[in-house]
Image (cartoon, rainbow, N blue to C red):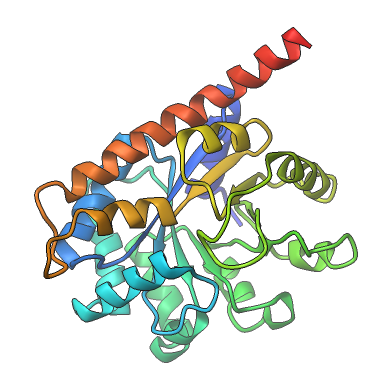
Length: 285
């Protein structure tokens, strides 16, 4: 593959000697226009990479917050076509920030994998995270995605041992997403010491950047994870911030976009301070 936006972003982050902030929102939550407004606001708020969830009716790896976001989006009429249109609209003003579509294979299968990859590439999608396609199914979507110039990002978990890890990494590109907890999104807080050890172990097997997510909710947690990871992923906390601003009918309010950008700004400050904190701790030691 030629260099992608994701590759360029991590190269810039490495040059700046800081980890990145990866933010997740669900496409179409709470409605298409507000979701697009949030997407457009994320880079200025501090997001380095954006994961855009593809709503699905049976998101088995997601916790209550992201499940509810997906249902809100589907109820508001979000479809795969609208999700790709959302990326295309974002690209009218932003040609730099990587967009990663995250979700499950069923909506892509229904859309048609070949058609999906063509349309995603043309819309400006940079990467895919498909949580229910294991390495044994790489011919289904992973290899075609790589051939289309789209990074295929694989998940590693606390149960991915050194025997399994090479298979997980074999066709992974862009970055490795380390799931910091066992279970669903937003269910628990990560143990920073265990995460540090896991990141080091993964890096012994690959030169790819390692992003850590699941359970990161605050600037303090983001800073702690960022001491060792190449990027910190935050999803459930952002989705919850959206939900907390909705009115009694589940509709966006004047405070919805601002609630997200305020939170992302705080998280970005935490991530940017993480390496400085680590250097200070080493100096004191």
